Length: 284
Image 1 (tube, rainbow, N blue to C red):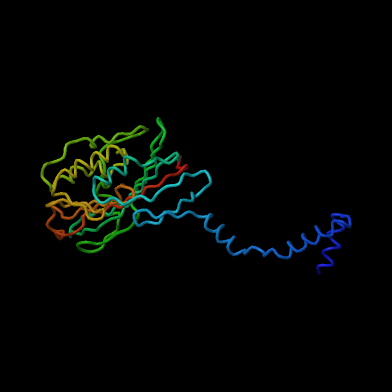
Image 2 (image 1 turned 90 degrees about the horizontal axis):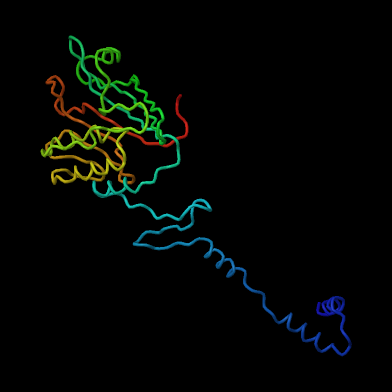
């Protein structure tokens, strides 16, 4: 093989007879070199491809989702109302045209003689524009869902035709900007009524993140208000709010108890589940 190599080198690089010694040295050097290990090279490439940093016990992947996206650190879940308030204040608003807020409501209603009561399900959907001077669209409807509480099961229409739809907030808004009038109202000093006073502002789609954050802090001023992994209650109160520790947004509310003695005392008379989405589409 060396003879063949000599011939190839001679064709590529013609040499004089006096250069035989230099050619021999070049040949020996070529055969003396050891090939580099490819495995070590691939280890280096793999190590450089992804950067992983250990921070306070968390593994944080620094590679962004897209090429132009900034690297972000994971958000620590809120452990109190005050921390949930801070999350709302620093939350970035997406570039979508509308915020879509969907409410699933179970409301206990009673009718008739003989008396019967059922929890009836409603759905409210709000399309709230992010731009000013835009029309707000709200759909309200009973879904047909029913859970009998007392007495015989009756058609859903027997309840919805004789009772008003559930009222979750108090302000009306036809076009943006919207304002929930109850957001800045004072709260009762009685722990049991504190969450009751805040209900409309907590549930309203018109309460801004800044207003809701301020409301959280005012609620938390009472030591009788408790946070348990996103569940907010008050001593002596009948309401329970659910707040997502990852976003700070209100995602639900329950109210127990009724003034009607025919309904069992521990019955959940109102239950609300809330979902928040961003979209560029809405009904006309």
